[in-house]
Length: 72
Image 1 (tube, rainbow, N blue to C red):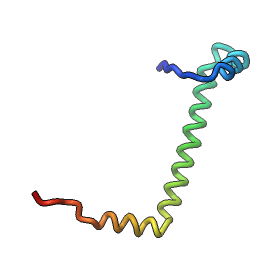
Image 2 (image 1 turned 90 degrees about the vertical axis):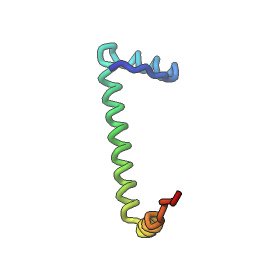
Image 3 (image 1 turned 120 degrees about the vertical axis):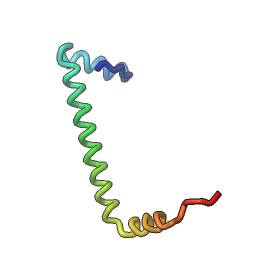
Image 4 (image 1 turned 90 degrees about the horizontal axis):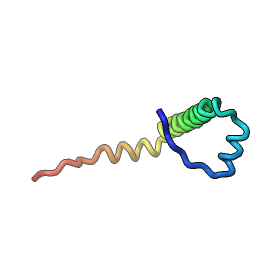
């Protein structure tokens, strides 16, 4: 798949001078994979913390106990 990205000129110039043309897609792919992995780990940590938060659990239980149906 091809995608188009906009990056600052200075970074693009440094990237072009540092990475050979046939290696650029691989480098970008690995960087994106690392970032996505980092974000997934951060999300998992946040979920675990939220699941262990007793006050949050009580608040969720309160919200879920509301009867949100209505009669027409």
